[in-house]
Image (cartoon, rainbow, N blue to C red; front, side, top):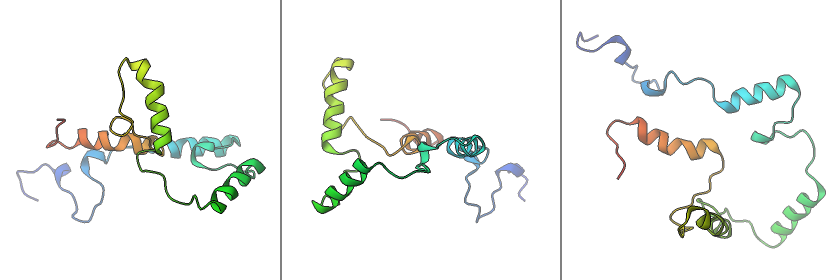
Length: 128
């Protein structure tokens, strides 16, 4: 080991975990799943309901499939959804929001939090 590098800065070349995130603990999802399992709660946060979907949900899914509505939604949110969000939040913020450049819909908190946290954790990056 070179004398100029402290031992904690040496990383095995095949170790996939970056030093800057090595001390991160369990995710909130793992913690809540464990709590839900321990208490017998229904964990809807991760898609773990232990009961059948209601008939109206099944009927809507069948109707969508029969109508060939089988494509993924736009990655940043379905156009009707982001337009509705822009219409709702523009007055609250006192300015017109562009639904396609200023609103992003994610599939969960981790997806929403990861990009800014990665940006801030990499020393060479900066906001423009």
